[in-house]
Image (cartoon, rainbow over all chains, first blue to last red; front, side, top):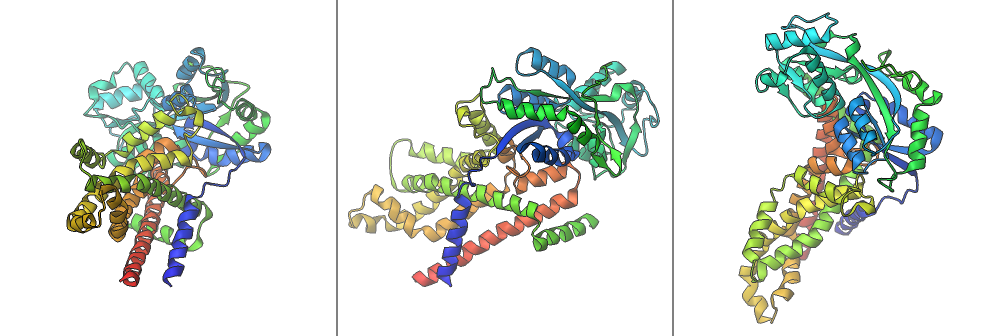
Length: 278
Length: 234
């Protein structure tokens, strides 16, 4: 009995120690955003690509700012993010590129059903933010240099409001991904800017609902680019480029359009006809 | 209450159906944390034993440093390992970042001081008891180290379990150096963090229950081994 137990434990232990079978599979590392991962898009899209190409895609989901930093350090082969201003800077600084449009969706302003700032149904995001600030209604900000955070800060500038004056009171920076920020907003009945994809996939909504949507300023463009192999020779150029080419090909674009939650399409492919940024 | 109930049901169905995705995550958790404990033990236990028996300049400083390192925040440990393993860091050419190996390294760094500090404390007591006896056989401190480690093996098992507990429960370090990549570096704790992010709190809690059940099983197995071996030896 004892010997068997010992042998079993030893076997389990050695098995645990053994390195994984040296898989010679082809793989690339993609630094992407929490919105693409947490909305479930990658879970749907990547198996289709792997089936077509034999290349496994390993996604590290971060905020856009952090994902670009991972690219700068050479720790990813491809970046799939959504902050056009920061992406353009990344390319002009020579860290990668060229950048391709892949798809878009939109941001939505989420708020409590009670709507203390009386903004439900507005189409003008700037006006909605001004009312939130005037009413000093709780507003949760990502505060994490993500694409959504950058978009939120641009919207405050357009509203002519400096939300920092509300810091510690109604303006609450949580410094976390979209999901945790939505959890925080749900717990505090606060307003929050979210990408529609994560919102649709989000489960812990409590009293939150969409209050403002459909404003052209809420447009959210995603881009993809290869990390510069000149800067980082470890970048897997061939397989990385194959992924990018597939994403912007008719096959990839059709696959993106096919991802739905409850019948609702989350991302709209636009590799060939990118919309201008206002 | 409803959430707790549905978490329990989900956890039970994960265990009974042996959901392949969950099984893969569980096995990786065990592999990473057990490997980290093994590596940390190879370094930490002899170091702890040496600090228990040997007198040398700087010994007290080392003991204080080890005790302090027991409180090393996992996120800080993860960040250090990240910067070391990043392509732009000193060990970049190895290409280990965002792999299970990177996670093992981070956890080993995290728990080696815990094993060393706890082993030192434990073996120092034993050394006080037996040092006369060991010295009478002509054993110096160097010879005493293996003897002490062997004689204290049952008590040291608890030390290893403390290290395993810390390793399998931590999320900060493995999240940073592993990247929580689906099917590759996703372990129980990072999966729990991800499901919490998605707002699927019952699923997150269910995974947490499975993790606790595994840790309980490992501890129970160790206890059985210890009791039966002690009886057998005695």
